[in-house]
Length: 461
Image (cartoon, rainbow, N blue to C red; front, side):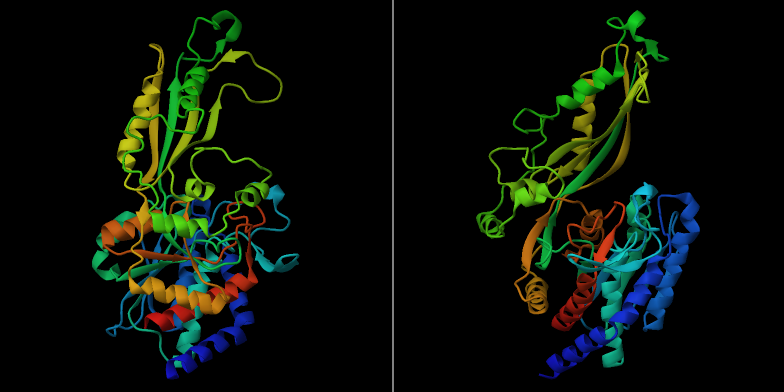
């Protein structure tokens, strides 16, 4: 009874302090912490220092920790024998291009009324500053009510997630003893269907590759050389087209090694979710799913591997027309992985596949763009059931255990480097326009997200 009464006080404190919390979020959003752009390195550090000061102000032992690239923010509450928990988020943001498509300056946050409710609009509002601040506001309200923070909390806030996290793995290895906990909490995911709370229990892995095909030592006149000289774009197009069969199967030898079918109980759970592929595609102007015909759409989105061409360039693509055989062609290709697929083996199979299409006068050059295996969480940990109940109490409907088609490599790194599972709970909505112009975060998501973390903290203390 006493615990419930104190939790009610924390929740009431969050409600009373919402306007001040939104002011703090707006201040955070004004910092253009674009990690991919060297011109914003000072802004990334400014965001780290802003976070450090906020966390120190509510009682954490907080510090900005330098890396070879952008800094990490690490904070701790007092030790106390409770179950240690690590909370992860990232404070860097995506670039804003194309700027002309923004309705207002991307780092001038404003609260707007929309047909779907009130939102705060700015770059980073949903990914991931707004989500990260749901942690911070929950901790602040807990401290205000209890007079102290919960014990054994570790916070790790990263400043280069949007630029591939080049310093993260070395940092985890170097500071493993300090950062190791019993469970990591990650707030960088979505509600299911925009309204239902969800805990992501599995993530697809990722392999990113860039390939460059080179032929002649210059662009060639297509009338003089066409039909005689190798065309790098044609070679590349043939190799990429051969990655899949007509029914969506990926042709790389050994590609499906380690891919696992859904267990019967998980299949029943996912079937009961009412995943609406028509509505999902309809939001982006499409109507017909592609892919493996013998798989249900939710399974293809969360539990089947993919091969996708993300970009392709070569030759002349400007105004008018230029009849050339290009000297080179480039493509960026990504693979999403499931089960125990090995990123290194997938990368090697792709490179062998491309080389098999090379005529004698062409060469292939490859550039690696990250690789991580899939992650599957152990939901038998009682923390998952406790969090599921806490989320249900806040949102008025049972939290769903779901998969994610995306990749959050940090979850795999926590498992392999620190030996702990992750619990992924997020409050973004599928129309938040993350990575796009006019990004937003729903104010209800922000408020109820902070309340949700307060409930989860109470359940796990």
